[in-house]
Image (cartoon, rainbow, N blue to C red; front, side, top):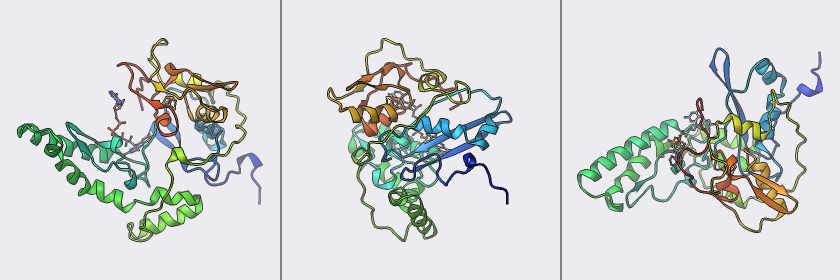
Length: 307
Ligand SMILES: Cc1cc2nc3c(=O)[nH]c(=O)nc-3n(C[C@H](O)[C@H](O)[C@H](O)COP(=O)(O)OP(=O)(O)OC[C@H]3O[C@@H](n4cnc5c(N)ncnc54)[C@H](O)[C@@H]3O)c2cc1C
Ligand code: SF4
């Protein structure tokens, strides 16, 4: 039997390390257009794991490289998916004059990482609740409380309950998690139903590791700054920083932020953390693992056309 050359042998989960949760996608968008991407759980262990670099590595896989041959990078972007599932939902989905819908509430189907249908349905419930509240002239906490039960009693709440441990099961690794997830799917969540207790992503212990070697070729693979340019980032260079960063960030944590951010916002300069806030493309990974993200002036950030 003919053996494939070593560089095309990849284990399941590649290019992610074994202890990281995630996967990749290739969607045909038109005859001459594909969408290529990589998902990485923010509870990864290696402090130098860099999702942007891993995506570039993926492009070097012979299968992917053959699809990209002669092509051009039209757009690039990044976004955090709230994939904590049922146990990450807010206790209350309403407040005085406010309702939480879609991704903001964490309505994402964990096994498929899809949330458009939940965003639409929760939006419908929110619109109905607001309409009634306005008619009753009561947009207070109690006037809006019906929204909570509407969502939780619908397929949104029921689906999320069935898959409540799906993501948490992968804390025991890809293969162990896969087996547990299969049992949960087959029994619609009846088996392995007890809550799997896990730390918040920001509390996950990290291991200090050497960064992967990577030099972009500027064509198929790109560095972070070229990538940000492809997001159509429209933030002015002198905008006040919208990132709330501790004064005293230890060097290893500065490295963690630098690798975590796909847009090159954070850099370690000696023992100092440098923050290039205008580069931010609002993916919000920061809000999970590090400095707080806050909204900026209108018109800032990426100007996605296809994403
Ligand atoms: C890479 C990727 C692939 C996905 N693939 C699928 C898929 O195939 N199928 C599927 O069903 N789901 C998919 N999802 C999930 C899906 O995109 C989300 O669940 C869904 O878009 C959530 O809708 P939303 O309206 O709640 O939030 P969003 O679509 O995120 O919309 C929120 C909007 O609010 C704007 N905004 C944020 N802050 C402010 C502010 N301060 N002021 C004004 N505007 C603001 C944002 O710019 C954004 O336009 C994917 C997600 C990602 C990241
Ligand atoms: S600073 Fe934070 S929100 Fe902005 S691009 Fe980097 S990781 Fe994403």
